[in-house]
Image 1 (cartoon, helix red, strand yellow):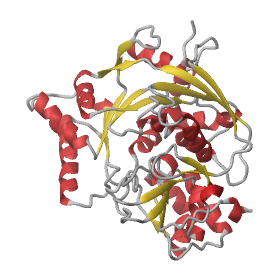
Image 2 (tube, one colour; image 1 turned 90 degrees about the vertical axis):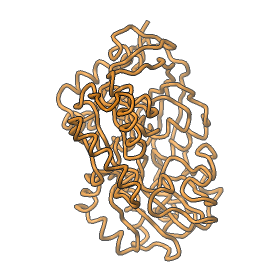
Image 3 (tube, one colour; image 1 turned 180 degrees about the vertical axis):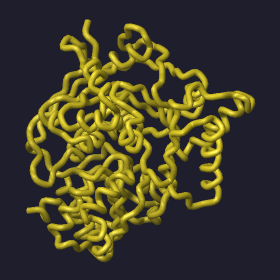
Image 4 (cartoon, rainbow, N blue to C red; image 1 turned 45 degrees about the vertical axis):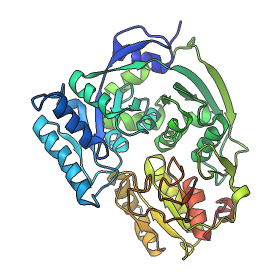
Length: 426
């Protein structure tokens, strides 16, 4: 019987011939922690090992500072200091401090994580790395600490759905809209502890940014991981960052032709319209045309879901079509995913245009994924964001958030109300 991609990755990491439902211990390639939860992991490790323990392999542990970067309170500063001191004590060199950006993206850009790897993190959206063929998953503090001691963690092998995507996006419609459609179609429990493999011409010609977007909300469908086979320019980009052995790993992890899937789903994007996730759930999906005209107090473009250079370019093109003017009554914030992306935006001349338009362009962070960052919404304000969650009060008690693509978000910032980007792009 053939194997799916996730079954191949787990088989290699566990040294066993696995099938769905099996529980196995897997070798961990990278175990990471961020500035949120990371300090507690360090303290718990010290407690468990009575202050005398050494991590199993300092080269396979990474820290990322992305949620509250730079720190905005003394408490946060002290927590971040705990990580820095722990890393120094343990000889951990992969410390991506406050100037780097969102952890998953930074580790991918720097070749720390590679296709076929098993990766842990304290972020519930670690699995966006599945867009590069990586089995990455968010876990709790205790699991992280266990991996630092053992170099292993146990998993239940998930079943896999195969999702094939065909057609072509219309002007003003993009991968984020398809993702929103998928979440609305499958709902919050549609991939309950499943893996999903994505195929079809839309996927094969997609950029790395689009693949990251597509896999970034697998968590919102209760899935374990979404996986896309690296190919073309995406594969070349990964090889340049991770080395030639990436090609071998990619070839190994290809699903067998006789692999067995739980479900085989097919979607055509040709007639897809711009969509939003309305308050207060990602699967509360509506067409933009259904909610157009809703007044917005703030728009945010960024996050691990849509903070790549291609995402910001899409927003820039909408602003350009609007003669670089946004509604003066609507606050607009743009946050690049990493400093590499920020540098790309600077070289392309975007940042000056954004600033001149009255937009706040920030340093690279997770930014307004939660109310723990600058720009939190006050009570009764209505916002739009390209983040992945819009639960009640997530970015401010009593506020409401619509989730949308970068194009829809910028079009809405231009008009000061929810707007179909096609109304501006033509």
